[in-house]
View (tube, rainbow, N blue to C red):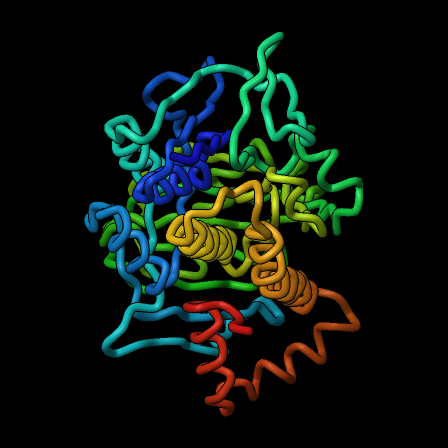
Length: 379
């Protein structure tokens, strides 16, 4: 039986381990020794497409109650202090997306992982990786694997020998501000507001609770960090005029940057998750890309196992790179251009406003947008 190791206990690592363990593969799952059996709290919410939702349900029998289905997304932009609706995306039979709390999905995946006999959880810190022998090193001991998968965020030093400083990088000089808001109104439609301070998304997770993801420039954040709760409350009351806010939960924030790896692997060591593509949250496509990566890796491993070939003697990681890099790169850079398009500048704003006033007339744009959001860019 072939043996792989997965390093990292975030959503990417937990999902990858649970899915690959369904094959005839032994998995050593490495997490920090400071992590308890219960994963750290993650206050963020995430949206995934219907196709990716069905993939999780089919492969892992994830509890459907974790997810809140969305049939309609409304898009708005701000012009001369007016909030204008420029596009609505909806579905009658299907769902556009499913929204969940990261913490709830992590908890489910963590419990499932601990019960899986093919997965061994090891709470040890990785000292280094030997790319020539395909082994990890912990202090003075070395452990060899057929495949090593790194799911350790976007800034780990373990990537250095793979990436060779050839990443596509951009510091947006922005912060993503996130929280959940309890209210008395019924908000079941997701919405994206392109405001002068930055794009703000409303993502319902229950009938009387929604999440906010607001990307603001670093200067605005620094100047207003102590008053964010009041600013958010006033902003929500402005864009959702009749809403009665009951409670704003703890506010979290993190810096936003673009980081795309141009190299995905070295020997039998593969980068997966945010380490491959850390992107702007404006379109909510980050975890959708990751799930498509996992899905492709799973299919390649299954094909390889059916042929009875050792992982170390195949071109499986090269096939993964060739099949996934085009979409990952194009979609990530496309999201970057979208963010630039909605910046409030004297050069872009007049052109943007003219385009948005007429975008409702182009039905094919709706179809393309919904198709890409659901299944990605197919090559």
